[in-house]
Image 1 (cartoon, rainbow, N blue to C red):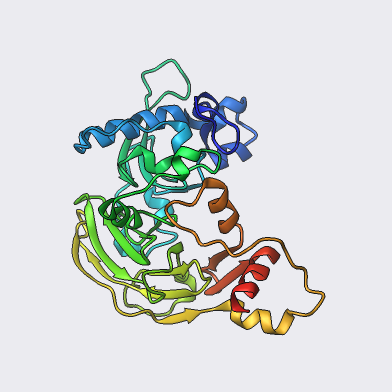
Image 2 (spheres, rainbow, N blue to C red):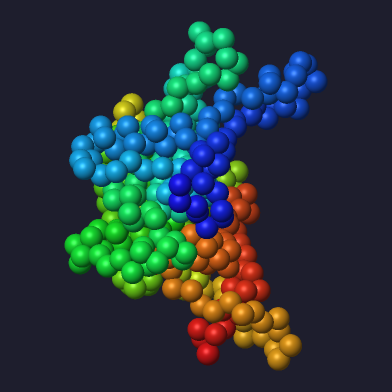
Length: 347
């Protein structure tokens, strides 16, 4: 077994669990025991097995199967259930009919790939949390060697890639995804592109080059739709997202997306130029920087497809944009390490 940078082998990571609990049930005093609060649970190794089945069904030929250690630990989790989607995307882009009873949709982000999975409760089983798992979407490199980039592995560090493989690798996800409708996900890539995947057609529906250019990967993509209580416009909202590059500069996009109300299929899709630019660091640093400002030994890290897990974790800890839909505010959180690193970039 080949250790990951955290010192965990495949069995250790494969034994990690994802547990879904009913929040209202957890608060209820009528719940008889802790087991009653858990809707379902699954091991990472089970998910990896389903990912490999999905890759095989898609016709990925000759590639070795992925493992828990090559994927690494789960970095992000989000619900794609219709109730959850209606809170972050315009409601007319999500069907009104309820999903099948006992089914949950999850969006799962690893460091190098994105997975959408459906969980089905198996009521005819004696096990209280028995469930079925179906992988609906997998976005990431097909070559398992492209997951095994490790600072402790000299063989991997010295590997060279063909121009075609490198070009394809740069089109892979460099950010977590954000839903823009029930069946369309937006995510950033290492080549500076913003891409949209249609899970019904199982294809890329649209793409746009980020204003930062091809040398600045998009590392953050978040929903930015204001709450219905803060908008007085009777017209249907357009889905809005904010994407941020590795240089910390973000852009607000308002998408012209229409879908069929009964099927969710795309009927029209256009991407106008960004509405606004956000460079919060440029505004903050000149006012706060002084001789005694806390500095760091962190040097600016250029994130790339070949970045190691520890480099990626270090980079993503530097800044985080969040959106408050009730006040229609975009909030940027910078670590002192991130400000120090950016200050070094700016000279």
